[in-house]
Length: 112
Image 1 (cartoon, rainbow, N blue to C red):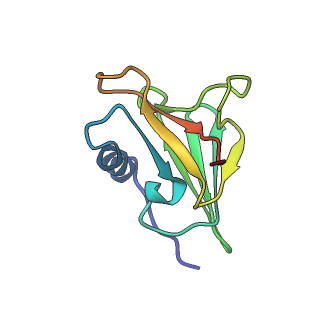
Image 2: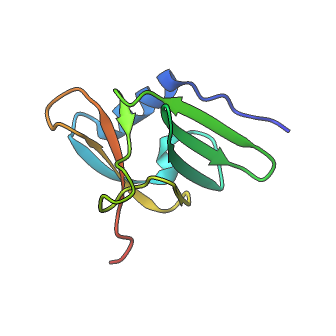
């Protein structure tokens, strides 16, 4: 079993590239990483947990809320305790447009 290490720094750089100076962008979830995975689950705990599930492994990335977050489950479009597939679109946005951080992940309506 081979796992691909993903550091917070690598993930942060990837998100910065996706945003490319914009306040928000809609991307397929697979764009968040350079490695393949089957599902990505978002969990709120002491830190934001991104769980990349593969056939024989799971990689967990812990991200500080000061830099990355998902809203609580009762908030519309929240990804708390939700999983997405690689081809599902998600919204990556700055909580405060024009400001450096934090970055929020939200569900996007998959229709039309």
